[in-house]
Length: 376
Image (cartoon, rainbow, N blue to C red; front, side, top):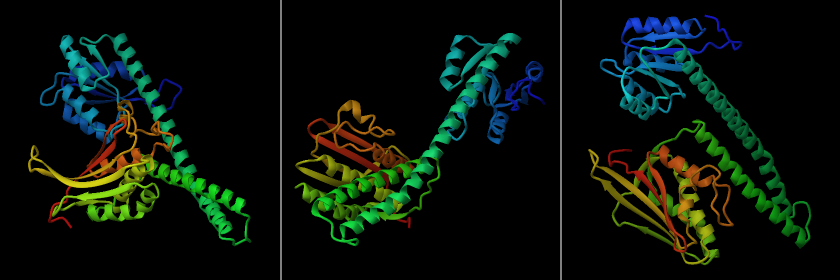
């Protein structure tokens, strides 16, 4: 079927109604405008068609046996793997049904009996919305792809430059004056920070694009925390901070996860705590809790990273896990580390949250499902 518009793409409309006469009427109206029409007579068939080949618009009858239009709408909206699909509900009911449909996720309503001009106007409006959103999604995809490629390409020259600068500091090209060594050391430190930010940005895009796969294994979170803490202890000692490790005695802190990714979370949370705390302490606590409301009960391993730093204002606590939302502290970085850490926690079916008050420090809480004793 040819499209009457200049665009070669023919918009696909899925029409769902349990009455064949209604399907024939709507099909006759829409086909004359160059749309590709698919007709089905049940909610189950509608979902099957959507998963097989997502349409550009769903024209959905509310009253159908077994699975009504509200349930179909709810299932479409709950499935985040589906692209955005406008849903136009048709109903002969009164205002409460409109409210229920909109709450379920429908975009618009049209009442029966359907008027041709009104139907066509609503279809055109929703297809314009669909095309606009698709264009924005594509622009974002291209932007993300560009940034990911650029970030990847930045790593090689940065690593090479850092290597040459390190050789200069070590006198490989002759002994440099002390003031030159200081300048080179500053450049090297800045380059290392830039390389770290580049690596973090690349990891964020890999996660966001769905290109990151986990390598799950049984992990002793206590051993992982102790290892990271020993590596970062010189940083805390340099600032005179008391680095404390507190673990519940005789408790098992085994989880199933990707060791490198979980290590990334622990390192980011602990290094942030040391970075933003000028005096006092940084404490890491491991404990276990059990959610008895689930069947069977779910056991959780919790890691708390608490500091005696400046704390985080309530209005900032809801934003620090977002993209490029650094804190207001003068030492705040790119705002990617916490976003990436929460993404990793969620990929492990866990959570990462913060509790903080200005002037009394912050406490970041990582919760992960505990591994069952028979999991290897």
